[in-house]
Length: 282
Image (cartoon, rainbow, N blue to C red; front, side):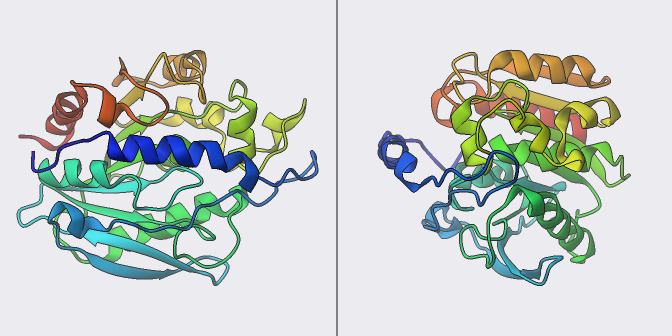
């Protein structure tokens, strides 16, 4: 692998974690509120020595979504990354580099209101934005875009599961990490989704994003990565979703806190490599 991991980014994440609560505006309990965002887009794929293209997309409501397409010289497939809440598309760059090194093109974007995308960040538009990104991949004319693996991180697991549940023939696999199951997510997780914690919080997740409803409709090979140390999306939530997901499926326990398995689990790369070889061939 061309990339290595240091503690620098983990320290930055910890520092931002201390400042995030002051960025969250608590709104009414009976509606979706704007999600908190940190619009810093740094670094870009060039940090890992990767060539990339900046892509501008028109969201369903007319806002502009910004993404990066990272081509592979000899791709065996294409990975669409649905990112998590709060941070921009720059935060899953280690996964971008990993999937590229595993022989894939990669497309990652910002939801509207996040990173450099225009508009207001709200859970109500997340799936529409994800589908615009997926449509771009399908219609881009780039090689190996007829073999798509979906990757979702944290909030991004919700649109990822919704897209996988559509059973389109060009979707060949799904990987989700730090999977949201709204019945058990902690209060901070609700706030990150723009939902004020309360007895009716789970019901505010849009039906089309509901992972409990989508899991039984997923027929593609699925890899669930989850840490027992995850304090944001508790382990029992992903167990319920995995139980509801048809075969073929895997639940792999990784080390580390929420969404940081790639930094903290020594086996992370080989786990992902094995799944990608399974769905795309070696």
